[in-house]
Image 1: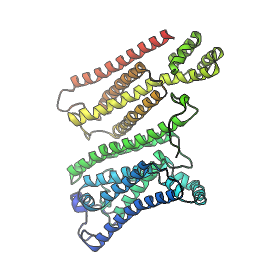
Image 2: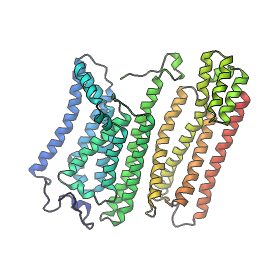
Image 3: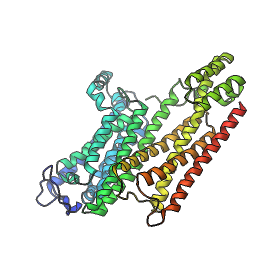
Length: 295
Length: 202
């Protein structure tokens, strides 16, 4: 299937997967099994790397690591594993609704959980100071700063989202043997970049102002709502109309549910930071400061 | 001793000047500074600086309530009319691009406002600056404003969706927008009462 191929609208979504004669692995073949094992190993590597880094940090004498961060990271890797392998992956190939659920988890929930795991902080605790300084120098480079800006993250997540789900004509791309998995990888990566830019607990060379980060979150919610309603409105001309309608509504309400988590993380971060600021008189500040953890 | 307690100990002239300027004309930054200077001249410096912080926090109760009102009415609209009654349609396919974008932005804003206003309320509590009447007044004004906007702009001007389909819309529109106006007026009454008490107690 070529990149620009358009599946005729009469072909239901389920048949678009593994169209007859298409290249790429089909279920049950050796290639498919190998791909599944690779995906499992990838998520396991993500989890194990974090645990190893935590162990190294402990051996270096940095023992105080909040367990919620480890739980968050492992949860992110676990959700990623569940939705990209096994029965869920099979169901996602046949139903756009299930595929949408997978996309919500991969593009929003997994990135948020990974970012709340504060992997960069853990990395900096696990490596010698020399390596950490090298990382800090590298992170200050202009291109990386531009990449870590909320607007970059917003564009990298929203534009592909809008292109892919605007009116359903791009949906066959999801079944492309190479581009399909790449789109999933992109949504995890771009989602993580965006979550890091707006709610990241890790050190950021130049964190954007709360106003800008808040505006980016609002824009992200708005794009979700607009695109899902437009997809819904075009469902009348799609083959599997009920499936597309359901998928669009899941995208809308599921996106809302996950955006609340992002909003809570965003507001909680600001709430804690302003409580720590000695320049602002708070109720308890005069009684010896608010409890708050630094790093 | 809370900050409010320190407020009541300040001299009457300075308090009145500060409150009147800030309540009547929020934009009058220059006058505010003058009012603050008056207080500063007659009270110890540390207390004066705290009083300078106090008044904006005081007014913030209205804003926090307003945001919460917007959020809660949007949430109830979604839960009751879309999900439970199925009166509103998710999207009735007759909407133009402007309606879609406006709906998306307002939905995003109200969702943000719900979460942010709760954290802002927690922040007010943390600073011992909660003024319940201002906050409740803000909520009522927020509910009324948002519902009126939804009823007039979204339902009528942009034609996003109607309150209910297959019925005579007039009574529904009257109740919807009448309720919005009632909320708005109730909020203004509460705020007016709060302002009166505020000025009398100074």
